[in-house]
Each structure stands twice: as C-alpha cells, then as structure tokens.
Length: 200
Image 1 (cartoon, rainbow, N blue to C red):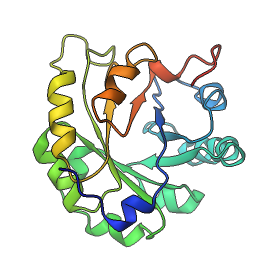
Image 2: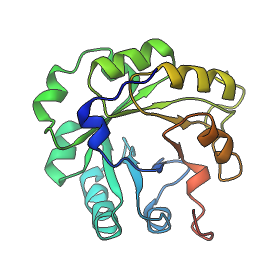
Image 3: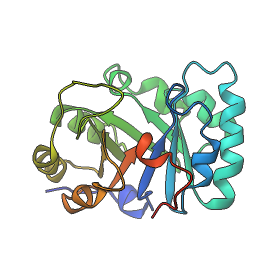
Image 4: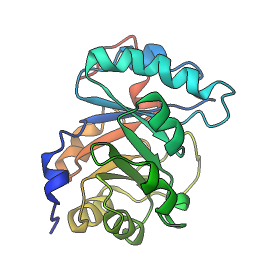
C-alpha cells in the first residue's frame, strides 16, 4: 500500500505533465500555453544551446497560469531560473543524490523517472515527490520497444511509496484507463502537444 510522507501529502501535484522534446516538439511554447491550470511541464531540451533562455520563456508562460515547471537533469539551472523543481532521469538517480540535494530546496519538487519496481523503490528512498513510470504503452519515441502494460503499471503503482504518473503512449483517449488504474496523473509529449484542442 502506498504510504505518502507528510511532504508529499501536502503537495498539490499536477494532474498532467508535458515533457518537452527537442525533436518532436522543437518549440514547446504553444503546447505549454494550451495546458490548463494544475498542469506541469518538464523541460528536457538537453541539447538546446540556450536552455536557460528557453527555461525562462517557459516560466513566464507557466507562472501566470499556475503551471509548474521542472527542469530535467540540471539542478543548477533549475535553481538559477527559479523553477518549481527538478526532474532526474533514472540513470542520474543511480549515482546518488548528494550533488542534487545540495541544490534542492525543501519547497521544490523532485520527480524521478522509473522503469521498474526497483527504480520506484529508489525514488521513494530518495524522498522524491513523485515518479514517472514508463513506457506504459507503445511510443513513437521508441517504436517496437517493450512496454509495461496497464495491468503491470497498476500493480507497480499500487505498491509504490510515492505518487506514480504514467508515461509512454498516453493520450487524451486512453488517459481514463490510466487514471482508473491508480495513477496520480499522466505525462506525455505528443498526447499533450496539440495546441489546437482544449486539454481537460
């Protein structure tokens, strides 16, 4: 059974999270503008030469709309731009949190990527506020790759000691299955980047 820490229970976590992608979503600003309140954005764009500038542009869109912005893999940048938190890919968590904790303030969110129950345990042990568990369904990013599937996702998420979001092939069409499985929310690139439609 999931046992939340006082810190996690006090957080108002987003219902949906848009992940930026320098290939599939080169300019994420319109997609961010289309998000409703209580959403989140994880800035990846690792190879962007002006990543700090993009982070500040996104923050200017997010703040008035009450959308949380997390920076992936760079605690210094997250702190420098005043982001709402930090996202760590699973391989970074494997190397320990010493350097990351030095830059992380208590009021900021920590999100960790996970691909297995073991990784979810590590995320909880690191006092992460939530984890992104993937890939649940087939994805365009990794065509032909293995998937967790909805039943294993539900089982792993129910045993995790932190809120778990579904990532990988999640869309507005199948999000109801995800939420019914016990997920704290859902995360996507393509599934949340169609700015022509209102996102609910």
